[in-house]
Length: 251
Image 1 (spheres, rainbow, N blue to C red):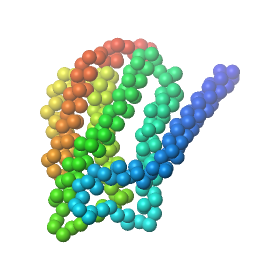
Image 2: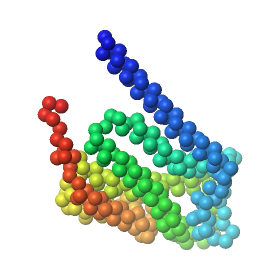
Image 3: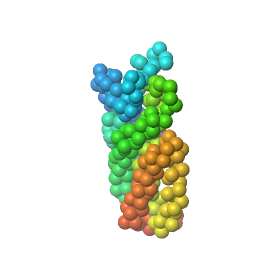
Image 4: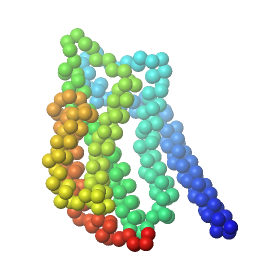
């Protein structure tokens, strides 16, 4: 009975700690969001610059819903607030799960969390500065004669978020490769042998997530392939987890 009670108390204490850390994480995003509210419209203008610069003279963006001019900048401020607070949010997640990890798992998890976050940021920056100018230039140049480009601000935001997610996830390729090798799912030799299929798959992904022009497709496919090679290089310098830390037979 005593052991049962101690187990229940321990479970409740974990729930309380989880609630506390979730409140801290949400509060951090909310505080940053409040700080960004005065510049929400500027944030949207900055986000729309790649398209605005490619529009023909006199081109502009529109709002097709009554509340869109108010809510869309709020969404942008919320997105930026989450990205700014993300390191703190991840630190709260790490603080909750770290006590339950073994020492070798901590050594693996912390670098992976840091690198995956950094790579996702890099993917978003690459999309904004490297891809958007080509994509929107292609759209503006291929518009039929007599068609005036007037993109809805809400639909533009949805497009941008989808592109950010696509390129952010694409830049996670090295992390995925390292995990596959570390946990013994695939070997470095197998990954090298699958290179040709990865290249073809990268161009297929590029065709699906970007407008149908060769430049935009290549701008996603080429980094995806190069990051795959980076992952192979990083994975070749480590030993699979099963060899480093064999699981006991009685576990």
